[in-house]
Amino acid sequence: MEPGSVENLSIVYRSRDFLVVNKHWDVRIDSKAWRETLTLQKQLRYRFPELADPDTCYGFRFCHQLDFSTSGALCVALNKAAAGSAYSCGGTSRRAG
Image (cartoon, rainbow, N blue to C red; front, side, top):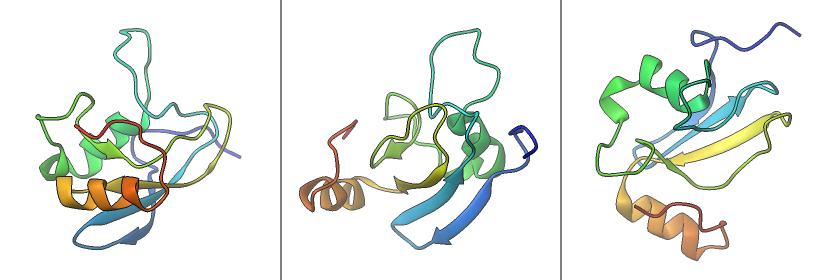
């Protein structure tokens, strides 16, 4: 499998409230560390700059986590109401902000 890149973000599903992406196995979800060259956060900003929310810590509302070396579907809430709904329906409370 080829390494992840900023351009190869695979979209599984998109609605008005949620975006589901296929996280690559070698991509971290987010990071504030300068040494991280590629993160899902950067892929999302590259592909969907209009969806970035400056009111959140990392720019996006990730509904759950996947480990660095784990690939798979990852859900991103696109607004506060959707994030609240995801968190109250059994999602892991990660960053509601």
